[in-house]
Length: 419
Image 1 (cartoon, helix red, strand yellow):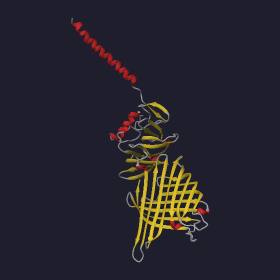
Image 2 (cartoon, rainbow, N blue to C red; image 1 turned 135 degrees about the horizontal axis):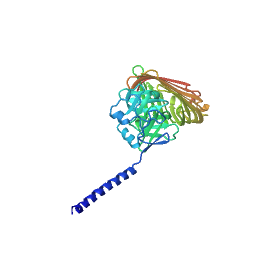
Image 3 (cartoon, rainbow, N blue to C red; image 1 turned 30 degrees about the vertical axis):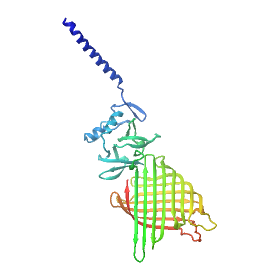
Image 4 (tube, rainbow, N blue to C red; image 1 turned 60 degrees about the horizontal axis):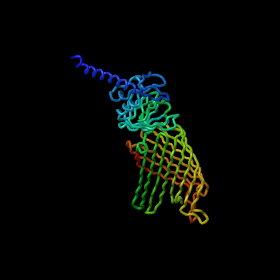
């Protein structure tokens, strides 16, 4: 009788054991080993990789930044699965950069271009390093990268070591050789940190025997992503003497460049609009396309030039009876920009733009700007600038008076810079 009463209990225990075994087997079958793509080669994640060789991966991000472990020598390197690596990157609240000297910096990766990386530190400000002097990078922010041999821009948070870069997004994790990186820039079309903006104002006021007033302004704005650059430049001057207008000129130009490689870029659009009544120019509009090349693009100096062809339309304030007030012409356009850091507190900027068109449209013309700026604080500078405008064939007004060919303007100003 006792054995019969115990039989249901034994049956229940056996059933539970069988169910446990079956569920364990099901879970083992369903669990797939994640894989990671490295230079188009698929390998199993969490596989130990030697510290030397073509597929050296990144140090453990979580241990590096959450446990306070100091890096020394060659750390044990492992490949992380997509989910694991993404989770570890979530622990990082800042972008981190380690120099080859072993020093760590906390802040934000701004850009990498032509082997130079810009890093914004809250304490030290905007810093520029040669990429060869940087051993490791971890980003908390999503970045956009151009990789040699990859047609599309790659987006994600990055982990860089001495030989490889790993880019982790919500969809996948990709690893490439470090030397294939062309550019790095913040991701997101609307992000303000893609912009570098500089504006300056200057004024002059005199009252007494002669009343004089002058106001001048300049603006330079640059938006750089991993694959393109957008530029805006404006300069304007307004002045009066004894309440009589003596200057009222404005010039704005904008260009869009697409990087072909580290040195060459395409310029599908350059638009310039100018007005100077004292040069008898009511409105001059020039549109052109062209090619550009960086002669120097280092951490202290940027020097590029471009050339191309386009269309120019010039409307004059007044003309002689036998002249046309609106002249259209083909134009050859050339530009060069030279920006260098003479010292930690002194910057020099030179811009030169030249146009060749038919004589009725002005012939050879150029616009030259040179400025020297001294840094007062991280954001404010004081400077002096010289502008030289030249028109080879100025158009006479209705009375037959021709404007002079050369126009010079010297100004002192206070500048604000955001980058």
